[in-house]
Image (cartoon, rainbow, N blue to C red):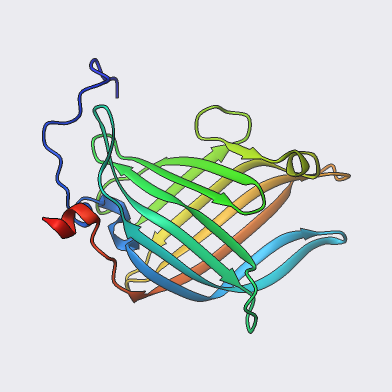
Length: 209
């Protein structure tokens, strides 16, 4: 979509984010999954690791870039290995949806020095969302530390979310990496199914109205 006026916000903005999340609405809340499956690189090749995960997706107030309007969820994923308390993996970020265009954005950062901004398209009522990012692009890309770029370079990221008939949701993600000393790309994959353990908290503006 092209905007002639890049400064003026929409005249009417519904402050109830939960009512305007479109395809992201089924993801709102706190979720738990104990059957996670991670395929990651090791010195001898691919390693498989089970993991458990808690994901919190809470609605944020509507966000604007001039006329562009987003509704979204603040995102925190915390993973551990079964029977352990140490963090196995963590992510912080946002899921955003632009009702006017169907644009979906998934942004996150991990505490090993990497950030990702991935995009896709979806409409209200869709039960599957796919997003992707590519290294080397200024829009919807991947940025990493010098060490990760040299030793475990990430070239692409793709994630598919599926909303299940029982109210749970599942994801599969494929992070394609180029590892130092290897000629073939490595597909680092993660998948899990999440069940809601707590309802979402209304965003501040909606709660105050």
